Image (tube, rainbow over all chains, first blue to last red; front, side):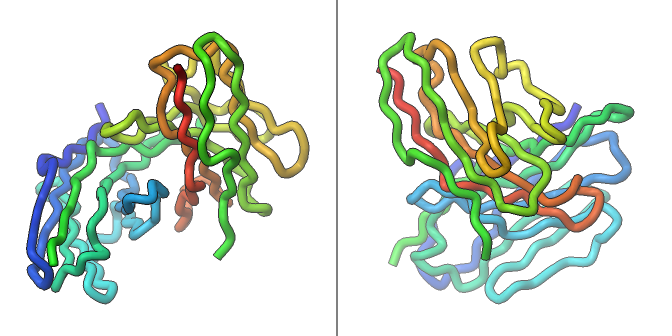
Length: 119
Length: 116
């Protein structure tokens, strides 16, 4: 079955600390897509990154970086030099489509990690 | 950047009443979705819609729920007889293509539904 696990429910750090949010996924598909979304206190879902299963290259975008490891089925997210504005709930998600159907597929979300960055 | 627009941002209703949540997806998008998030929980898939019909639906999406694209721009979610457990944030989302390429799902800001 397809599943996304974010074992860290809440993380609290002090500004300027680095923080890593863990994501472990389960899928039998050989081709799949992984995502991270940010949900600030205002409630909207903000897209951060998409990673295709055939592209294991890690990515850096400013203070954000992502470590994709197929061998351990993990897609971890690191914020370097955290800031108060990074305080939010972060969701890891797996895109899955049932084989052989005309389905559009769906995102399967993890439980989310609440990150609190204190000044 | 183009946006998915949802109205209203908050909706309060009495149990048993019908509600319609409205969404305007991004104009050139072809795939539409509804997700919901019960307070403090993860985001859950409800239904996807393509080519004027439901493509896939979850077990949550029972006969009380329906979706419609009444014109070329709106995408609505109707709950016929609301229950207390329908209280949640409902997100509309759209994408241009079918995820085979570098598609990402654009989410609206959500409608917070409170059933009293």
